Amino acid sequence: MKHFSHDNIVQLYGVCTTNEPVYIVMELMIHGDLKSFLLARRRIINQQGTPEAEEVTPGNLTRMALDIARGLQYLAQLKYVHRDLALRNCMVGLGNVIKIGDFGLARQLNLKDYYRFERKAALPIRWMAPEAITEGLFTTQSDVWSYGVTLWELATFGGFPYQGVSNQEVLDYVKEGNRLKIPERSPESMASLLRFCWRFDYLDRPTPYRIVQILTENPELVHACVEVPSSTVTDDCVGKFHAPRTTAHARNRSRSNSVSSQMSERIRTSSLLKGSSVSSKQNIAISSVGMHSPGTKSKNSETVERKTSFFFRL
Image (cartoon, rainbow, N blue to C red):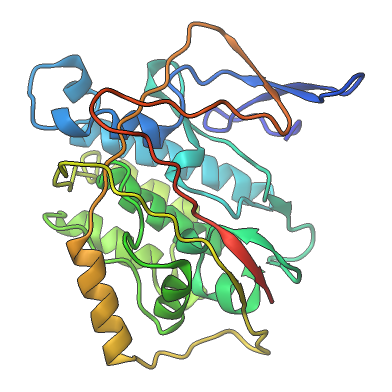
């Protein structure tokens, strides 16, 4: 990360390794992560005239999506794959500028255009592209699939992908050639971009540069598509599985009507809300490796920690 220098990438200032624990000194993103930022504004989406509502207009939502795309474009130019692009790893700084952070799973491609993962580890299944699930194959285009899921999260104000179903069911669902449902009331331009990012063959997906172009040409492409639920929903789906290795890129487009219909129904009828917000007045963020802040509870609803990854072996 010390080589990264971009307006839409969280800046690393230094690492303190003299004594235990090890400290990482990074740029402070004063408004915290984008997921919490949007969840805290879910209930005021339609309240015109308030400062918080003005922060999440279609124009501002599209600018946030553009910031993320520009950060992804920068990583692609340096031949890095992020492998964990999600709303929770996009940070909100001064002026609501969005920057990509959390490079714990990032890998450099070097002379290759792909990174192949061949061991057991916890990975964010719900954001992973089909070729990453079936073959452990990570490319810039698999990051583009994850960008599509992140854009879906942005439009649904922190919605949880495939809400209400287990990681194993998501795995099977995506391997069969399915994808997230387009949010209701999505404008056609946003729906088209989501479908573009989620094309099953990674060679057919747009490049980050093309996504930047699309968002620049459509400054109000992203719209809020969310029905505010009445309570927080717990989703604690963690398990272990072994994904089979394949010798070629998976292009099995067969459908299982029973699995797909059950998944569609469960996804359509489930919803979530987590109220939280992050604030700070400092200019430098110092985090201790292996240390985490305790969870907090709001007056209206209890913050629920949602597990979004689980172990598998290729």
